[in-house]
Amino acid sequence: MRWLAAATLLSIVVPASAQDAGTLVSSALAKTTSYETLSWLTDEIGPRPSGSANAARAVEWTAGQFRAWGIDVRTEKVVVPHWVRGEERASLVSHRDQKIVLTALGGSVATPAAGITADVVEVSSYDELKQLGAKVRGRIVYYNNPMDPELVKSGRAFEAYSRAVIYRGSGASRAAEYGAVAVVIRSVASASLRTPHTGAMRYDPKHPKIPAAAMTTEDADLVHRLLARGDRVQMHMLLTPKTLPDVESANVVAEIRGSEKPDEIVLIGGHLDSWDLGTGAIDDGSGVAMVMDAMRIIRESGLRPKRTIRAVLFMNEENGLNGGRAYFAAHKNDKHVAAIETDAGAALPTGFRTTLKGDALDALTARTKVLDGLGANRFEHTAETGADTSFLIENGTVGFSLVPDPLHYFDYHHTAADTLDKIDARELQQDTAAILALTWLLAN
Image (cartoon, rainbow, N blue to C red; front, side, top):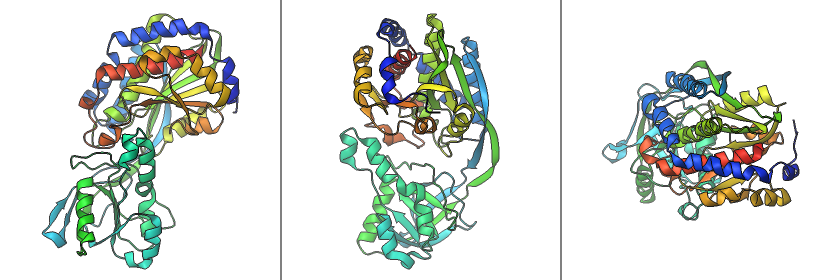
């Protein structure tokens, strides 16, 4: 329900809560407990793809942690897809069987058992694909669309990502429309040590399902150079993923009930699932750790928020958004004051994106001086602030998302290199402090 228009947030943030927010920030910065939570989630449980045994373990363990901290918690049913990666390899049979390092895109169908061998044709846009038309029939379409390095360097890595990732999402079906037998994309990456980046793709039911994979940027450059010389490039590709029956999983929902307006909710959330290649430290174990530690610090402080603070660890963000969709279906009539999502890594905080604008945004910024010391008192207006909370935002809830420094996020995103060693414990704790401070101010 559209319970609060953005402009009414002028009356929500109460300056008297600033002192308590400062106390909570000090508590957050005193230890690196977020890192300890993240360490268990990544090192002890490991990768957490939707439908997997590890995802189920993560639900059980995080709910148990909330319970151990004395925080009310429940799990809420979510039915999720269960896609599993199999064998994956490729080579250039036209060029002495040089190995191509690639990985299947999430949701891809398998190749035939013997694999696919076909000529490669390169395109850099859907317009180019359309111009080739029937010429791609029987071929492997290669989408060569790098992230813009200048955007990455200027702090606009997510903009560069959004421009390149469209070919990962719908490229297979667009190529299948013209008779292609498979697609490969340049990994959507800002850096690479010959490491492929996976990610979800989707099929258009109007067209045949063809296999889809991502090459490393180094291999993508190799194929581009060969084609630019006028060589005939023929690739052999073998992928053996499977889509198994859907699995019953859960969102983890924890609450610290408000003392004065318990029916009004400030939501903080991250997603519990990860891809299978790494251990999901950056995406989004770090976000989960921030949310959990923020709740623990509030609980142990003895302070009571006026509004209810609800933490949601969503399941299936990576390949379906079924957790966000299920949460909205169950809670769309709850009085959500704001929804804060953290799903952008754990580098130093730089501020927040928000759907607020105008006077309401100015008023909020003036009342969040506690974020100055964290370098996080910068709010940028955007229409979208998160994936799992998007259903709430579209329904009128005010949205926020934490913005850690994005410079290196897409170096490791969706790869086997997304592991705990990429996280700096102190920077993660500063992110936790930023989330905690904003949550507390909005809840009071």
